[in-house]
Length: 131
Image 1: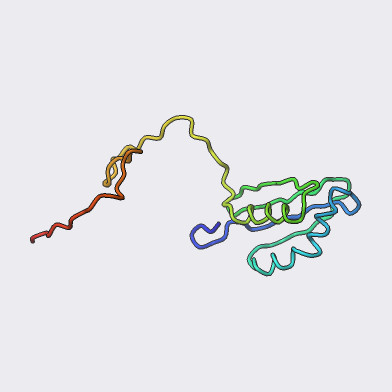
Image 2: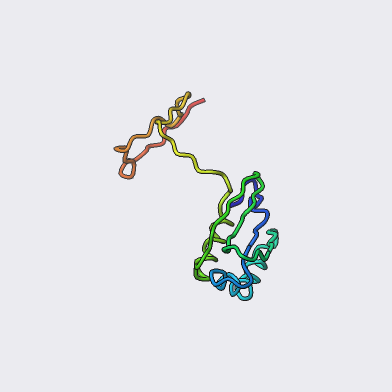
């Protein structure tokens, strides 16, 4: 996701085990699908690291200082690429759940929205303004 014209994802780290069975699809992804993704995202730094004895994961580091880690143990190559694309398209901000209704302190110029407001059938006439 781009904010102010800049991609928010700075670095993508792919960690895998050299011998583990859960990392087999990560190893095949690195040898086949990672190069086209890297060429299509030239501003993104991609780091591949071997961490033996651990399950594979993908770590995303964002400009905002946030980072996200996704475990990709025993996933298909398509599923891992889907996770990588999802991390590339997000801003890195944590999701917040609103438990109370949100009230604005200032009224909108357009008026309050209600679910029953259906303006598709309305005709709006233009009035001339005399100076």
